[in-house]
Image 1 (cartoon, rainbow, N blue to C red):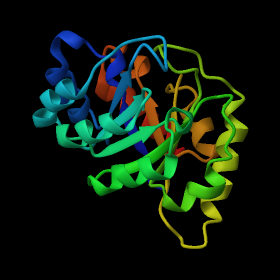
Image 2 (cartoon, helix red, strand yellow):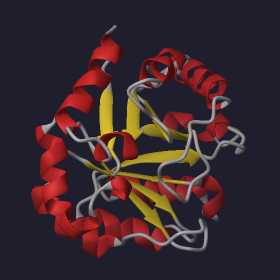
Image 3 (cartoon, helix red, strand yellow):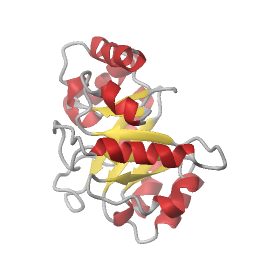
Image 4 (cartoon, rainbow, N blue to C red):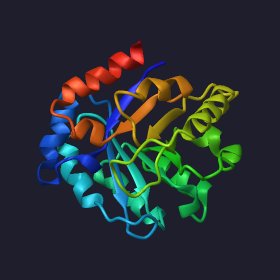
Length: 221
């Protein structure tokens, strides 16, 4: 299985985002995770399409935009134009989930649904074969630096089972976001994840390359 590591800019130094993007890429990042919070769907306010467009020239890897906003559709278009490669959103924040997924894909981006720790997986009953990615939150969204919620592990395993059972053989990434560290990344991978968002564990370390390298060694063990 191919593994992808996506440093979350939520934990980066916002005074020098372009430099931070280049630094984690040089350290081996596969994606740049970009958290968008609206102080409405989640209790925090972060960044918008203008910032995404500003870091795009620095990004040699796809920008993975996670929309923690309500409503969703207008921002989908703005982030696609700002250079997003992947756009994920929370199904309960959209009035028409199928339409939002189609809108993301029509604008040339990979599309995914995000599930909070207590959100049931029922949308996957009807949408999994349309998705490019499923993102499972292993913390409650809104803030960085939280502790991994262990009950996410069986949920990861269930989504992996569903993805592997797709009759089409469609490639769907299984991403996990929240409390991912060097020490637990292998356990999360064993549950079935292939894409790992990590914020404070990477940006809070003294050596980004060493931290990402340690994550990869643990994934390969």
